[in-house]
Image (cartoon, rainbow, N blue to C red; front, side, top):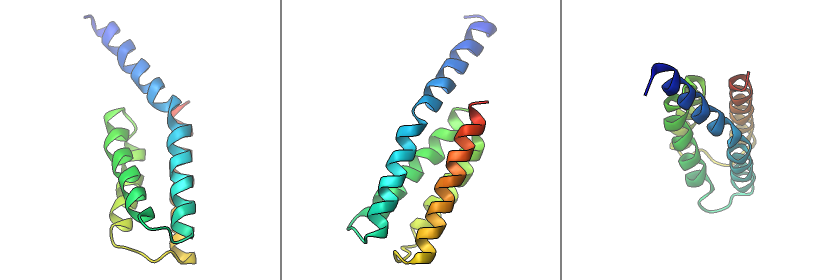
Length: 106
């Protein structure tokens, strides 16, 4: 494979990753809703989603996604209660991730 072919393959993988961003964002929003309502396992599910994004973001060339997600993963692992402060922090984190996905589309 030539360098150009490898570059094109990597670009295609990045486009595919970004095309799935709406699904990932929907999963995070659903997790936030479950967390807000105090659903059992909601924090663990969010931790898993953040963990996956932390690993995949950098692998696909989006280090900002990894940084934001890793920070959120570590924070949610502390077991915050589903109060207004925690919900606001999660909302802000999801908004930051959405912005990072959008900036990757440019």
